[in-house]
Image 1 (tube, rainbow, N blue to C red):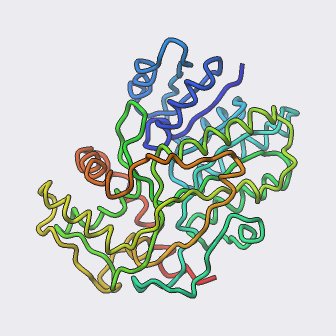
Image 2: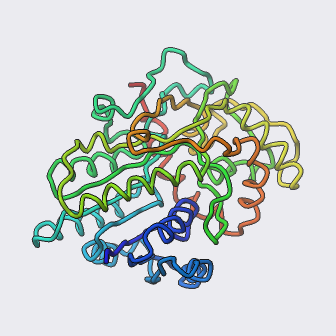
Length: 360
């Protein structure tokens, strides 16, 4: 029996991934780190008779010693929370390295990153046709650096694989939309970020002309990549994968949309919910934007997907579009009393990169 340690199982991506893995691997043992143990029980109540059960481990990813121990003990680790958390990365790598040093099989890990690494540096709210279009080919991924939004996590994870003590897939989604398949209906982080200023100021804003674009992917499409990557790690059975770690950096995106269009859709729905004063989105200059908006909504992130298809990914043809899911997504976000709590933590991190994201 294999043991799987999940960080973020009670969150948006993690809950959807866990449900699928429970069904696909009924003999595996799943451990989920959670502040709220009762939240993990929801997965067991929702599980079918042949689905794997989940053991709750009370704690948080801020408990480095606990994360390191559980990582050391697990055959496969999955993290779907806080892509740029350096402390969490350090605790995980410590556990993986100790496994290797103690003669255990090579650690296996699925990490959730973010497409903010590919922001083009324009910061003008304007599409730049000359900006670099990233791919997840190795020659592009080797250009990543630690000044990028999640670079201080992604680069050490890639190096750990080069050093031979870790097999990992780093999955890079754009904005994620749609109600996830887990029993806990959590909001997508991207909505938390986009709503951070709007719910304080009573208006939905975008920067400049708002023609900069960002990619979106439906949660059901995204989960398939996790399941396929998980299967590859199971098949490796603790042996070092022969492929380059830079070939296991996987971008996921489906629908590119201008920020002014996203803002318009959101403003209309938030007005219906009584959360903003106008159904119209408002353009503001960059100088009036907060740190999150300065990084996330002033630039384009341009890329093409490729590696996902080598994992057997096939986009679900009948998945709804961003516009079709947005109303329900926003209701979940504003209806969740704690949905914006983590945004203040991220604000400081975005402040640090707001002035350092450069065109590549």
